[in-house]
Image: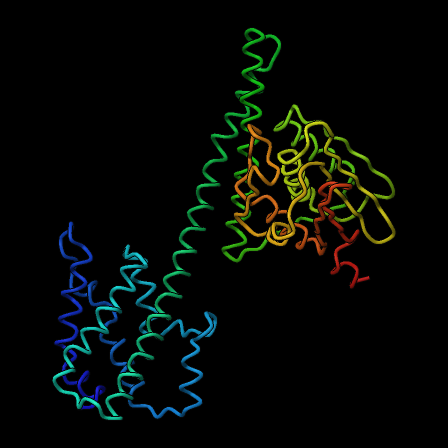
Length: 384
């Protein structure tokens, strides 16, 4: 019996075995309703039957064996919807894959007494069935993963937003304790520590919010106004100094530094670079930030001297959730406010302004991040 005919004739038996297996995924809980267990299993099998009955050339078979790119997956297929719903229902990716493994084994076990072993048709049916199963599993995994990523990023965005209020309270408490008329010298020192911790945590939360925004497809919005880059750099230096009071920072500015920028975003960008430099610096030398204006653009460089960053690390340094290890330069005991997002956010803000950011690291010049920004956004230039 052809496999497609067998599946159609015995689909209820196959689905019953699917239900039995799905229940084993919830051993410590009451069995969920059948519609949750079965989900789109019938539609997945029916799609496989259609695939088995569809003529396939050797070229099509070869192309199918290579798999589909994620962007080519049909997000409306039964398998794709199944992946989305399994993620929303609390299934793990391992459980999702186990369902397909069990379904494959069930079909072959039930079909075995009805097949004609050793024939070309049976071999072709088995090959085509495995191809269709692999494609269905891939579609489910893609949508499961996308939904899981979106759920995670939404959670991070909500978490970051909700942390802002208690951090603001901490900042106010630190400022209050630092007043000369309040308490003792020890009280004021505690206020400095509270304010410093609030500054570090605020930087982390800001990075978290920007990362979540970019992952959710929102990009980084800009509010462009006429700004002075020297003042932006000084504000970023003040932020970094609050987080690293023992680190010497130096600012050098020259040339015309006016332009259309988002002050808050660029302050965050340069704060991230300065914080990163402070973490990995040689404590015998200052961290420097220099701003130079020319005819059409402004170049800002942040430099620290310390261990040279290896070339492989430089290639991945702007990727999200990448952190350098202690061996790569982080001072033992240094206060780290990094989630591995700071340099990623710096790159995104730079790109939003139509600029570029690069990094170089060697024994002579140290580690230098170079940000080059157009003095006027490209859209503004085009309108002139």
